[in-house]
Length: 164
Image: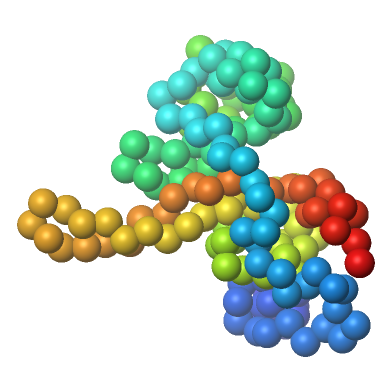
């Protein structure tokens, strides 16, 4: 039934957004949000250490990225608490046991309108940038780099500060 849902089709790039009366910021690119570089956790970080790092740095969540660059998911304080409280994880477990693996990605060149659609159903989106990398034999491959994590609050602050 997803293909019958226009919002899902638009969010996943299968249908162009034809909303009329779009706000002034609708077509501005995500890169204009001036996001700060995210805190990245490696998969072997323990839940306890993740909590300490997030608390010390003032974050509620952080992407978990393998050394290869593959985005595994997000560790959030609330998901960690829920998992520990339910007995599904312990503080000594690696964060991969408590990651939130249902997340949306958005590119720097995508519009704030597309981001707005994503944030209607998600607490955050991971901002990624495709980068071409070359290995020793000269062959190339594309790698996604985590550029930031964006929330509805980030979008709201941008819109309110730049209201025309």
